[in-house]
Length: 238
Ligand code: UDP
Image 1 (spheres, protein in one colour):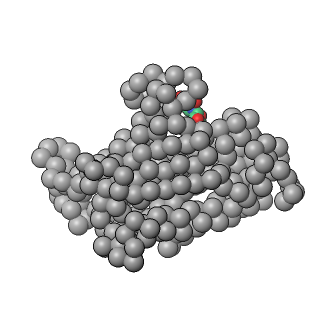
Image 2 (tube, helix red, strand yellow):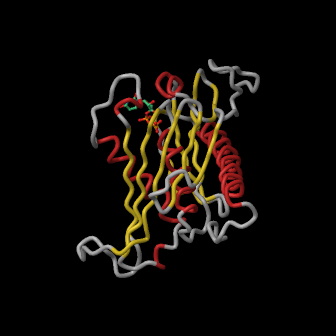
């Protein structure tokens, strides 16, 4: 491993792709966010909390968080068949699980909070960016949260541990490890591993993921401040 290693797209091992975040981009959702990272473009809308009439699906002790991740047919090089598939069902579930620890769901019994994620363009890392965008949209919807969850992928490419894998690095690399954390506590709310890392590589990769997540969390906070100034209107209840 060498810290001078230059990646195919010119980035250093610890560089994120260029990121852009915005909140309040949709008029008809209770909260929304748009996020770009490299060539990824993701739009998130949040509805709720709203009463869930179905007794079968509602919970007496808190809100139900429902999350739908969808890739547009034009979001990838090879046209994606519209509609849900195994991958999008899995990603929807993991995003919901990654975000749940941050929300005071107990404040809204028998209610639902719905998160719709539309991937408009994908270039590797969409599950992590969806978590980042969903947390922003929840804050924009004024849903009480302990913190905004931040996420990024780390992995191993050409024997180097790198941050924020591109699609090519994801496909040709030796390992891919997307991680989400609650920055205030450092709690890991989601971690997947595809490939193999030694113990030493895992420790290095995890530290890099923490560094990436803390940086992204600052951008998330900045994004809310840019939109709402010093007055975050209780959108980020620490
Ligand atoms: N991808 C694709 N077609 C698909 C699914 C994924 O071209 O049907 C691309 C897309 O750029 C995605 C990348 O492969 O971002 C990596 O996909 P993965 O399943 O690892 O999820 P992600 O890294 O986006 O969380």
